Length: 241
Image 1 (cartoon, rainbow, N blue to C red):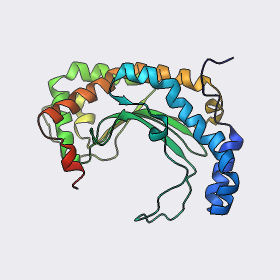
Image 2: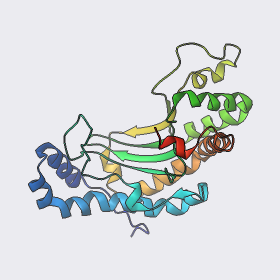
Image 3: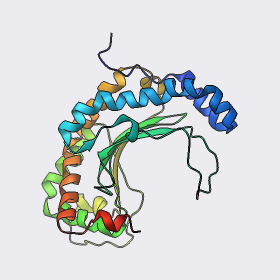
């Protein structure tokens, strides 16, 4: 018997979630609301509960409230071009409280109808700020490459959504070049075998990956805290945007 709260997200629950999205009907949602809660929302919150001790050890300012950390099935469509009210995918963030620490790096877990994934991410609300990350990489190249190796050991793959087309650091070491063009950085793992999220062993998988990738999160949080102490990131500026 598992020592975890999490018992799995089953295939029939994912199928119901997809059907709910497809029908996009309040009546259908209300009819199946409890099944969706018990089959999808509760297990997602249980993941947070089971990982909370580890996440607080990684960062004692990490928010571990399972209700506030997990996305909702019901979408707020106001001001959104996509008017479908119900999601077919859910996610959770392991991060500091966003009102006090906007743009802070985070871990995540998410699933879709055809895959699941997790990783460690650093996106800033102003892409130009990411040049501070570049500077930190250049200042601490050995530590950065060790953190990259830790992510690789965790099975995470480097991703970047946006890059600078111009080489901003022509004299930088070759092994650092891929990261010095980035406007954001992610190290992620995705898998199409959804049977792996149907079992409590998912918690062991996430624990191992997140702990192994800890050096990357610590690198990110160090540069983030420097940006805050230097006054570059100010929560009040973020909420005036």
